[in-house]
Length: 163
Image 1 (cartoon, rainbow, N blue to C red):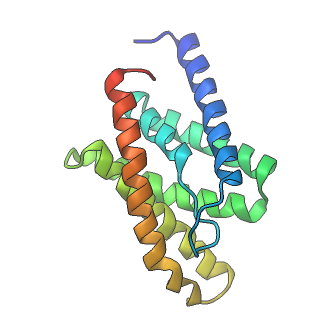
Image 2 (image 1 turned 90 degrees about the vertical axis):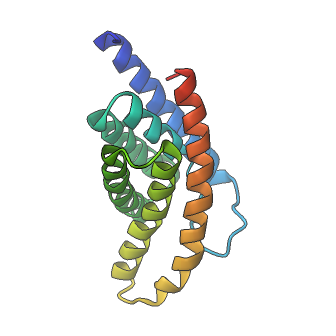
Image 3 (image 1 turned 180 degrees about the vertical axis):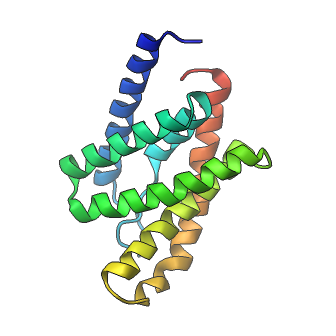
């Protein structure tokens, strides 16, 4: 068990690292036809925090990262989309993890898919139309691929006890 001071320091470092991952994502062009598609690198850290520290800590790191990266590298719409995606994604990941039916990679895939579903629902609401749903198949496929990659990375780090 870590001391409260060490835990706070580690969580602060994870927030900083997730912020760096967000910045890296903002400058990497993703060759997809869907605007705003990203690799989801910060989600690797959120998954690690969820498994290593718990729900409150994962929510804290995720919310801090979304707000900070939104203000530093994005805009209010970016924050809104990210919060919606993160909320839906996190709820599904939490349920999947608690069920114990899913390995970490599957939890990550569900997180990637449902992050995109949360964002597309907000987009449909904001543009008052369902035409944005045409992006959903590509977003779901991207969520599976990025979720799997992030899940593999998170699982490797988790098994080594680095975080």
